[in-house]
Length: 529
Ligand code: ADP
Ligand code: ZN
Image 1 (cartoon, rainbow, N blue to C red):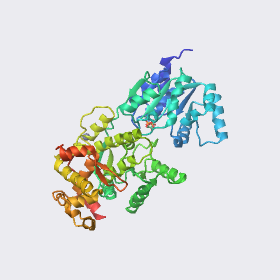
Image 2: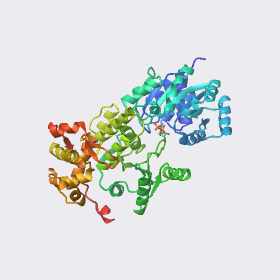
Image 3: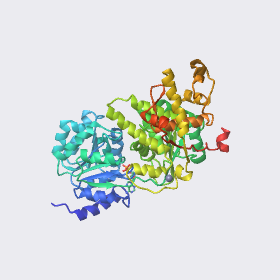
Image 4: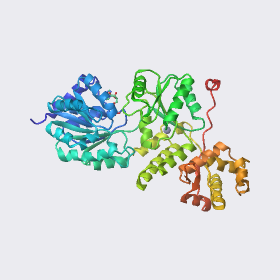
């Protein structure tokens, strides 16, 4: 029989309340659900926490047959399926963690029409037997979750996703819905073309998260800066602290505990039981802090995360947005706080230079990092900058750090020339390269053993930088690195000129720099410990 769209739509509202217990749709959901129920293809861009899952779960329940959900989040499938089963939805999954018997049980349920939803890891579709299985069942729709994984331009590319274009060829009549929370214009276009969804309807929800306050501060004593934030603004709140390495995760968590703050570590190097236990505590308890690598957070659904703090620089704006987006899903005021410094830039540039993959891949990583650095160094509203990155317009938010205390910019041309001339002379006159610390010592005219040993006090620019303090020079060098006016040249963080450096040194190219805000005064509470 022809689908009776009108009654199916009211069926969608009924499922929303009966099965999921909600009385109204979130913005965008209803339109998307109606479109897919009616058999249309959809490409959905919706921020984390926007409610993407219902956009395919409800159509799968309303339409005849099984909704097949492709998701790379294997670790979450069991939880997702359990939650659905608890709500009375018949769901199962197929992935590499199962043994033969478990797989057979799910396959039998699928063929018997006893499933509403079937979650599949993308690599399953490379297995011919899975495809044959699907051909023998009745499919209501295909949902492609985390669709940005198909984009090589993006930050999370998975080759298995490229195979998903075959879904459309094999099942031309089954509607497809692709969903992602992270898509710049470039990624968005790539998803559409690779998944053959150019003619699908595109639903783009706003990426604005007005209840999140974005703040990016210069890093000088990160653990203490974090502690200050926790004590003065987030006492007793649940939050996530992201670190780049497993060892800094462990150290930071242990240190917070020493300071009397409840915190647990989470990273891929911990055994599965500890990981699961720490994650469960975070979801269940009030006011627990998880210190984690980016292995933590995908699919975590805790509404009252009050802050997300980054102690190291994220590799891309997409990553930053996704991680900070875990704060404040309940819509209440929340903080996204990032401490970032010279060492971050040195380290990340170096990671890119030594990363595997071809030149194009490295160039892509470099562009992602540059966009992240631009966000860090901006003197404009952070939110506007963030929204622009995702192709949206916005007005200054009045809530981020740059809106609340607009940073001054200053003409850093002469300071830049001084730094660059030290690097230039070290190389030209001595054939040497050094890292930021030693270069600053030269600028400040310090008599260190390394200076004496190398006779660097004989260099012309020795001592020309007395007008700035050491920390200020670090800020200058960090910004020169961010602007591509200096390059990191070895694993030791030694610095070299770039083609653009010459324009500053020899052609009077102007270098606008951001004046660093004063370090926040220590409060009585923080001073005590
Ligand atoms: P996303 O996948 O977009 O990050 P989810 O689908 O996990 O988001 O949804 C985020 C949270 O919002 C979940 O707790 C979900 O149950 C809840 N949610 C989704 N839709 C609604 C709704 N219409 N009303 C109330 N809560 C909803
Ligand atoms: Zn702002």
